[in-house]
Amino acid sequence: MEIKFTHHQSAHCENGVVSNLMKHNGFNVSEPMVFGIGSGLLFCYIPLLMVNHAPAITYRAMPGFIFKRFAKRVGIKIKREKFKDPKKAKARLDENLKNNNPVGLQVGVYNLVYFPDEYRFHFNAHNLVVYGKENDTYLISDPVMETVTTLTEKQLEKVRFAKGAFAPKGHIYYPTDFPNELKLESAIKKGIKQTCREMLAPMPIVGVKGIRTIAKLIRKWPKKKGVKVANHYLGQIVRMQEEIGTGGGGFRYIFAAFLQESSKVLNNEKLAELSKEMTQIGDLWRDFAVDASRIYKNRGTKVDGYNDIATQLEVIADKEEVFFKKLKKAI
Amino acid sequence: MKKDEVPQDKSNLESANFKELCYAVDENGEYTTVNSSGWDPKTIALDNAIQEINARVEDAKKRVLDNQTSPIEYFMELHKMDVNILSSYVKIWKWRVKRHFKPRVFKKLSDKTLQKYADVFEISIEQLKNIEYGD
Image 1: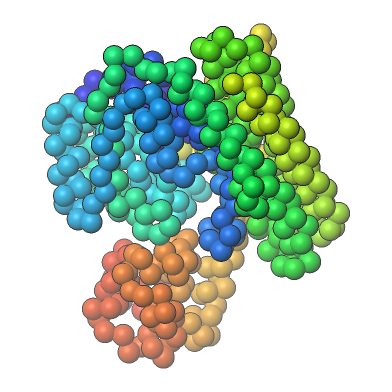
Image 2: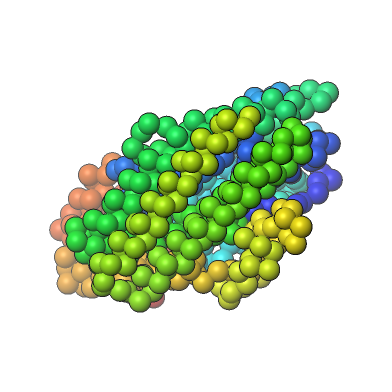
């Protein structure tokens, strides 16, 4: 059985799944809209947690949060379930497909066979849509891929029950109830407000202050951890910023696209201006990645290099602080 | 980032024959999407991470051959895991997993326990005991 489902490629998986599911249900919501309303933009350093033997940093909201907030703010209802038993998880999935309901799944990337080998790490916050089943093969729409693909029952069970940090536990989700019209205006405002609040939070690990903390750590790493480890850590920061599809700006470009679209919905010129500013900040993040990559490519031993890029991060932090204060006032 | 600045560098995405989607600004300042074949800074970061893993695997292998650790640690590294992840896959407490790294303890493990590890690594018990298989 195959549900008529249109696959649209997106930059990032969770936004993409939500946007595709919304479009399937007749609401034309773009990926940046989902990202912005769901307050997807973030900077957070998670102390003590090590991912791939390096400190964990994220440039976006926790898996699942974007959809949750989006749903609440535009007034749709979602159903989500996690399972202990893979058999029950499979039964629930098949049941939905039988009812012509495409569903979103959270999966681990390590056993996702259609991904290039180099991308297959133990990362458990990937999302995709299942839109049908033929014999024992599931039809998969993975939003970061250009086209649709398939997974066998066994392959799908494996990725749904991947283990480790943020284990998906068969997590399945889908919208169940829609209003006649989406409340976009108020939703956009709520989304922006929360992003501003988080980015300006008075905590040393979140938002602008989190960026400064990382800058400080970068200065210390070469001396404290040795050049080899410092380079590895730096590489990880860039890889997180560079999760598939962020175009180098650590989600800043998607956010800028959201502001541009919002300025039209809300008739607010200021947001269009701020979108341009965010684009420039995204460019700065890109420059940071380029310079950081130079350090770990050449295995440079100069401490200067680390100080330089730390300074770059501090400049970004200052700019983002000014930016989010302005954005807060603009709505 | 302008539309024509979207990086089109060679990358490992090519092997899977797909391009990622990026947001960029067109001539009129409007946001649009462009496909990108990859970006060098990211490719370098990824390559470094993979080299790092390969070095860890090699190191673990050497220590297994020197009888300093058990093949479990080698296969763990080979599967890009750490003790946390391995422990949750085999459903054995972390401190016990670490203990199983000791060659002395590994030799005495029951087939039942060995099977748990073998299942996770998708190999047989014989292969688990003989790390040459990993090549």
